[in-house]
Length: 500
Length: 118
Image (cartoon, rainbow over all chains, first blue to last red; front, side, top):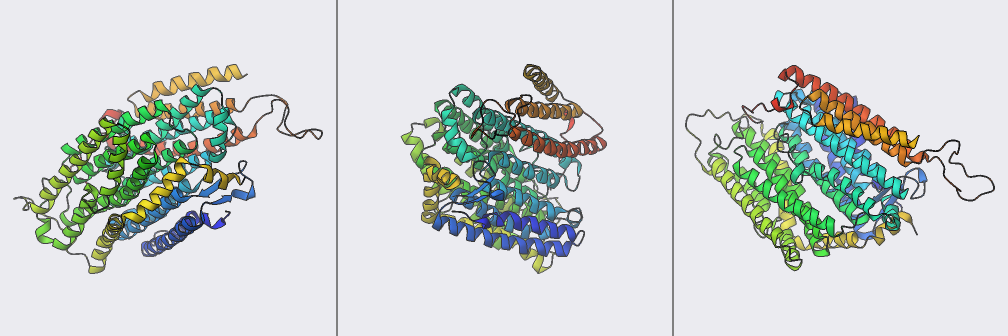
């Protein structure tokens, strides 16, 4: 079905950013535009999701060039879900930023860049053209470079060097892969590629090309041997920025893996083994890294790596049940990881530090906020009936029937390590008495009430969404089930794009 | 012509990888730039280089017969060049700022411990 409105979620953020550039240095106007615009973006995403859920895939041919010759945008259920999740996370971060980002950073254009980043994310999820996906990736990384370096503290810039080098390298691998792919098939449209790649006689060349894509997306999503840039850069920018990065940027890599592996490079035996090895090692290194960290945000950075492994393992098995687990975990993970970094920012506001040795006494002083945070932590760990629990059932079940016992062991280790570090963090930051001899600088208490609300509300919104995902898991599983079906049997997507 | 380009892009890839493996920040940047150029030439070579056969179908034919100069890779390269231009410009400014703050060109010295995480 043709629908020109699917790009509305891209354009809304472009327009917000342009208006904010016009209102340069007027931080109040920029804040109102950002929160209001993000709300409109959220409504657009909800409408898009509802339409796609009811009527199937929508496509848009740029400049009316028929596919596969022009650039195609396609909103299938996976894309629409990702756009919806991005909009929810973007809305929450936008509210948090209006208070959590320093005025200095706002004056240097934090908000326009933030909306360019959201525009890039939505574009990447909606495009049906592999080169266009590369271009959106570049929009994302150049915006994230600016957000990463904004403020210019020494540690921040040092982290940015590693972040920049690895991300440019990832784009290079991706672009090389696209080049070879075009050379052997003569097409860039993902639906068209999916039929043309079957006709290529030189299968080993196809295998080599798929390795380029795995490398490129692997760096982006921070899997085992390629993840080192993430823990050495994500603890440096302000918490609102880290929340966007931690919640959404690594997940773009997972989305791209899902898309490319389902349409173009259907995982063969070698790819499955490779991805499974990567997944197990990612879970283990992420979990062990999280065990030794004492700063809340460094700990969360390693948890991102650990949980990326869960999803890569699901992609490695590539059966329907495994994909339901992966997609459900993706939905859960975006909400919870964004929230975790917002919580880290809130803890910093409450105590002026993020080091677990210096934290303490939060539960005694802020019981209500602590309870809210506890719910989010429970969903992250996966206590039933909260959201982290359900996808793991599917991943466990499928890895038993696929005899992937090493992956099961890694899943259990990863889950237990998550439980342990979160319990440790809870005991250190919330239950422990404030350590002797440490001056607490509470920046939260003197704030006016509306600013306090602006800091706590986004955590509440994302917490409610997490609880909804957990309690109403049946609906989410229906959505994940349909997405998994579309990923296994791509004929409906191909038919919608190529219109034949 | 193709053979020459293939040798050149092999050299560029080799040089780029060598530079990226060095510890200096400037050489890291040079390596990234070389790899970018190599990738662009790779895409160019994959679009079959021929002389004097534009991608225009003759009046008495319906489809292309024989090899023709594919315009799509050239459009891709143009996009990639513009993007890598912007990224390189950003990277140069970033590395200059880092050098001014840290006073070193060595990537191994970029680990100032956080006295206080923000």
